[in-house]
Figure (cartoon, rainbow, N blue to C red):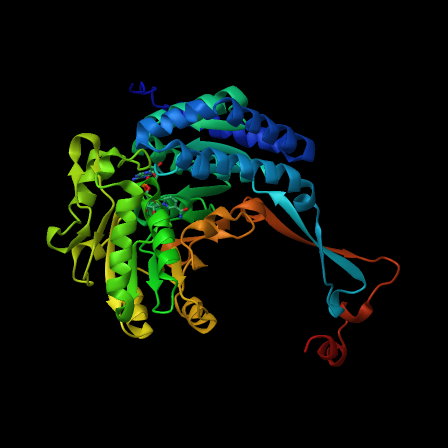
Length: 467
Ligand code: NAD
């Protein structure tokens, strides 16, 4: 079954929607705790109602196994919603902070106010999660939002459109239908914040457009995330977790370990375990495995297949263009000169490089675009773990795991340098869609004459406060 393409939103419709959202936001309706909670609950009811349709759509667009769909898309969003609903009252409360000597007597608080009208642009790889998660944060923070999903996942776009249009009015939460031309028109509009998830290339287009209106942006981008396997690592555990992180969603995960650097002394043992485990998990014919997704489009299939150097295959390498299947593939003895190291892989191909000293790891990371979205370290030594955490600048990291830092809503999730700016998840998402307003409340029971003119020789007192 293929999904019918809906008609693209016209330029005039886009202008009208954004204007109406600005007017609606100005009424203040979206700001109250009651309104936020009601709308989060409505969204939760819709996610529960349409779970099966969402899983069907994910199967259609990406061949996702139901377990992965629940783990990383619908269940993830539901958990995010439930914990946001539970915590929102506390998050909204102004937070007390210190009041400096010069600003005494008084009290100081940080208030969280909504940013206003937000544009949320989502990529194709986790089409439900990466639309719904920022939307939860936008609603929780008291905003309105316009949503644009990826044209590469039409079935998922259709179900998101259905959820949004059935649950909300367009002056509050709107869904825009379209591809690059419609997104270009959207980016010409005045928003109060743009939340973009996608490639660094398009991130740069988004940021340039936003600059014209001085619109703040949150950019959740990608890159080549290293995975370092030190000789003291528990190799069986490392192998299990690397395979699960890399081949989830057939490698189409922004935080997937892009490549592995393994210490030379354990390389052969590691490779043997990796090969045996991949065959055990996905079978001799991974094509028949019910637990392995497909590549989203013919273009991406061709691009990823073109990264496989047949002379360096340790395991996998089979492809089928008709079903956009690429087997879980490991390439051994890779160096920076190999094509697979020239771009973010974003598919089920895992290159293995070796090192003797950690300096060689840092040199490789340094020669790739700065800085990775994630860094994974497998080692039993606290000293090694801390050294790598302190040396490799990355958006996030896991010690003795892969990908799962993104599953803990208590951790900020985001990139650094070329992998993005800003962070979200849990309270960090609420803050991402809020303006942190610093408010000083000065006492009126006394007045400090020190700061008023005439200044005379008051500077000598000022020096005592400001030093
Ligand atoms: P993409 O950048 O091609 O597309 C993302 C969105 O931008 C889509 O909605 C698309 O329609 C739109 N778009 C594409 N070209 C555009 C243009 N010229 N002008 C305006 N809008 C345009 O990304 P993708 O291929 O959908 O997703 C893969 C990329 O996203 C990878 O680089 C991956 O690492 C990254 N990603 C990052 C995160 C994260 O949380 N950091 C999560 C998922 C994916």
